[in-house]
Image (tube, rainbow, N blue to C red; front, top):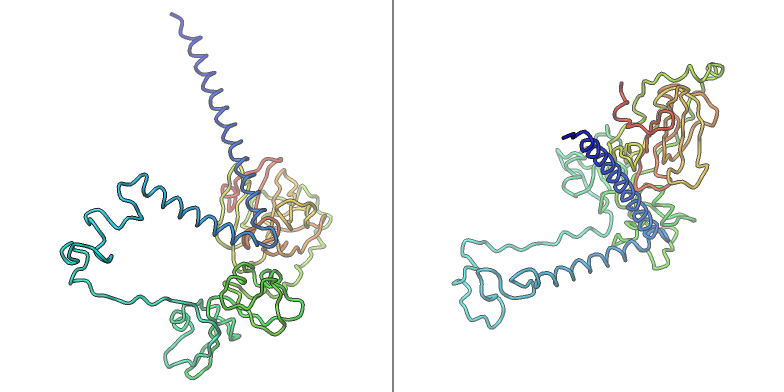
Length: 369
């Protein structure tokens, strides 16, 4: 019997099946991204005003699900006063069994009082004691070391001494005295924090209309002071006449320092490098700037794209500042912008991508070679 036709049909079936699965996975991923974008856009309406309602409804729905499923899928209802091994709750009035007989209360257990750890309502002045450091004081008050440094105009190399007075904020972040024209949104942007966190901090005096009073002090939880303006990078005018094809080396360097927040995938053609403190963005290789700004309404926000003249092209997105212009020649390692959170972004980072002849490549397989 000739098995060759059967073999060919089986191979054709496998190829068609793999193609079908790939198509379905891609469509599923794209549909997921569309749904995610709709949810994100909804939550960002009116500067996140719907976020709190969404969270509250989600928690309520979860609670209702637990209460309903507890009596349906479990032999013991979560609303019941009985638990496995204990016929009735002996702490409820009217229980017929002796409390100690069912083993609920043991003489070996020492009663303790749990004290609620509530945040302080204001900044306090603390006098440094002998042997204390910024690190030990931060640990005692439950705030970050940077919070103490920022509030007292200290640097990481500053030395504190006994008797010195320090301002200690109630939570990690910064304090801001409201000036004319300040808004919740502008302060959140200035201190790279969440506007909702400023509103939700229980001791910030923010009315329902979100209007701020000049002179009032607001706590910005997890905020960080704005960066000092960076000087414009040196322009290498002597390289203006070098042909574009001679600029790229195909040897790429890391464009920024920070942590990897998201890896390369078929639906995310790049890597995200995050750093709360921001920082400079460097050209990964030499080339010519072909995009500098936010020319469309795409989610990348402010970005720089460099054509390296050898088929390679790099993208640096979500920048807070851009230091180059279209047509400018840049060399490897030259500062092209500052890390930020413009466009569709949930934090300070740079979305870095590399493509070759229009095809996106995984930067992790190229960087450092």
